[in-house]
Length: 220
Image (cartoon, rainbow, N blue to C red; front, side, top):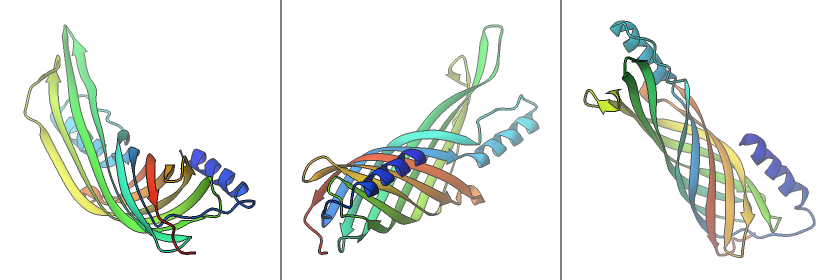
């Protein structure tokens, strides 16, 4: 994702000098969001439960690939400086086989979700008509929850055990708007988000592809 965004930014800058673009007064966008979530805390918790219970180790993994949605609004004060409010949610439902044999299959079903709600400044290079690359800083919060249940041949054996937390979040990233029509564009963006859920720090990566509706012309 980062390599793709860097390539797009390079192409936009390389083609921007001969033409002159114009940035909108405001924009609203929404679309798909991918999160590479740091789940070190969850893996360590499973390791402890397995050790205390004398069961085989459960390999959830220290990173998970979550998919979901992204939505935001943007206001531009001039041709290069503005602000955004950005929210999103991503989810995963994963089954991990613990033991299998004699017609029985024991699995741990885990469900993880994370919501991010951030805002911050965004600097846009608006001289190009077709591509408008940007960089941004983000600050706000994150809410994450995880639940687990033991399945025996896909039949739940207990009620869900769950845990959730809310934390401060900070990060930033870059991307570009690719013009489709006068008021519409596609936005490709990648961000790094640092969260502090469950009294630990997480390093999360996020990518998003959104449809943008833009209006007005910001002052130069």
